[in-house]
Length: 481
Image (cartoon, rainbow, N blue to C red):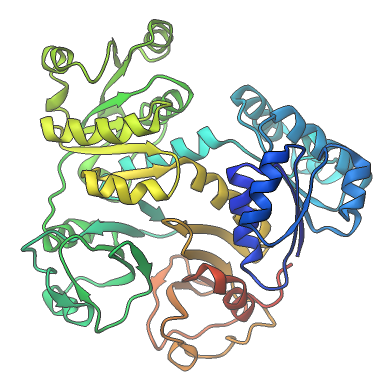
């Protein structure tokens, strides 16, 4: 693919790194900031242009007419939107993705898109010429709510039409899994599960049967939602009922989280029935030191208890009995404070904690501090953009930690080299691991085994090294559309 990225900030550079790590990608990064361009030149091996990315002549010089995709991630929402609109007017067939931080822009565009009929959509260009609009706040809030609904046992990845989920669980000292090999783990339980990855000594890798699991290691475990309590117990953890939830931060992300948690139109399913009951049952307290934000929250969420104060104030914690809560969600704009506050509240008695952090590098720090779930804001945006860049065969992509591994949901293509083969015939230890499979006539995913056979149209979920992802995807899906 040929991809042009406008904006050389963290997201632009991270996207360029991931795309350049794959063979057959040509990446051009454009920014008008001298320092950003200099930094990018030292970080990524791609074409770098120091000019205005919203200038059509600059884009043409960069080869926009032959590009497959344009990704606009500058600091300005307006520049991102205008650039996509400009390119759409001249080159409508190019895929255009824009990061839009302003929630008002995003919400209005989403509402307008939802109102359009299928007939209207098929005859008209996308609004603003943007095929996919990515809002960081929405991506992060949805990730946090997903974690809450699945018991806040760790970063959770769910799959459509399936009760299976990939859960990140820490092995505690003295637990049943402490000090044994991965192949010995299966003898500890009759529960069907699959270890997708292991985090050990600061590195994340695909599992090997002879790998020894020690206290402090983190396992990415694929398991049925109802079986998570048993695996938690084997890892030395215990899941509690998450009825009383304290949300620290009444800003945009906090507001979206509260809206979703208090939504009364959707009933909880699966594991949520055990730990979360229904959303109507939640006892939500919203805490923020900004009086204007708490006033707005009080008016917007009459069912919630809204408190104006500093969540680090011990007197406030004691008076409001916040340390008795089952879960604390720290979602302020100060991401370092979120981690520290999450760890502090757990030490004070809060059952579990979720912290909004800047990026994947902070997940490891959060683990060391004892935070149950860290949701990296930047990584959720990168994952969303990468999913849209992979082509029609790819449904979603999720990076693990700092992007060392990628989890890919894709469809087996007609030109796939895996077509007609059993998994044990094509397995490549250390290269990839197929986690789930669903046949064309199947309704739900199932955990893949050596006898799983693949056919065109089947859906699979696999995990692989990020720098090997494009090759493995080509093997299963065939040439990306």
